[in-house]
Image (tube, rainbow over all chains, first blue to last red; front, side):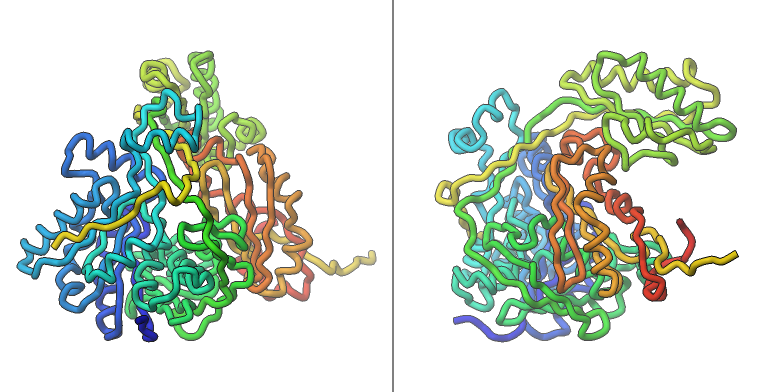
Length: 450
Length: 126
């Protein structure tokens, strides 16, 4: 039942907040290829779903990707006209809401009504799932104010939806690479336990899932790693063959580059043991993977193998965890660094006993360091002449975190000389618990909106 | 006065390799990819788990593991518990630890003089 022709999958978003003008060149290239093609958008990170749930609490019709219209509207007509399937997790906390929005979008554009499939089963935040979460997390769950709880679903419901004739598949927490594996399974008709091919498609999906991170985005380092046309980076396309191996490329005329080094960096991104990259679909082994430049902006990935998937699915539970207070103030000119360091000392004394205060000297030492200040303490005053002090403190109680905000503001009059440009922020924070759930306790499926 | 010609030169690691950081929870992974296959054996012998653990000592890693990918002339370092709790709990501006690859890439590497033409970037630092 499977096809042996190449399947092209383009990716037009690597996270919520990616460039919204990404899709048009990708769709143009997919259409020009003339073969079967899929467009994916990956828009969920660990915290995105919790934020989406909070948005849905405010407005029951919200909770899906806020930039959905900007991402999809420019290409919806061409995708429907040319049979380019769209598969995405941009449904976030409300896949059905996103699906209804897409149908409304099509109507507004005067297009035919698309067949939109809604993937269900990832959201386990409801009270009926609490016992399952408690079995997995135990006492760690006690007393938590849960905002979201989602299982990472795999490719199967996507495959089923595409086989049922969906033009567009919208889900929430689907594992990033499964957005690619689902269409590949539907297209090639591989066996559900063809672990090698599933693993290869998984790594194709892994290369696609961060958008331009494989085409020169997040790569450039002037004079060492130069990337042309970064203001108009092309988003990636994987050409997947019947064996699951793939070639990564990008639309002609776009900026960026695809070479062995951009592909290697993305291949290992967020990987731990390369012999056991766990997804809901398979355990991928890339320890013998090889990449080869086979043309301009064309890199082939081979050598990936796979093993049987695990008996569990990962789930993330997000909960309200308190408040984060932050403040910044700038010093410039002679002894700027000494004045900034003095301001930090003053804040430490004023906030003693409230909580751990992190102090950073932006321009001197601000990100390599640890929260306990060992790095900064070991960094001697180098006489920097343009320094921004940044401090942060977390607390379960809003009023305590707010104390930091007030103390930074008070530096205007009570701090060292010449401090300016105070900015402060106070916001609620989310915590995350991760656990593994038995597969048989998770019910994943799809609903077709005809 | 007699001088001996050095057989190796010390360079910052970024001249021989590149990398990217990823995060999951309180765990960071940093890839290290040789710019040329000739550099890979140098990375194997010099950029060890112990060397990396020292470079990140202020972050108090509970474990540092190195995985080797010989076909890619690359390795993957996995550092446990170095993100002050991770993206939800850290006070760091860079709570993902995304900048940490550049801390690794500042490590010194001794490179045989004969391989110097394969190094990337300006021959300045060190």
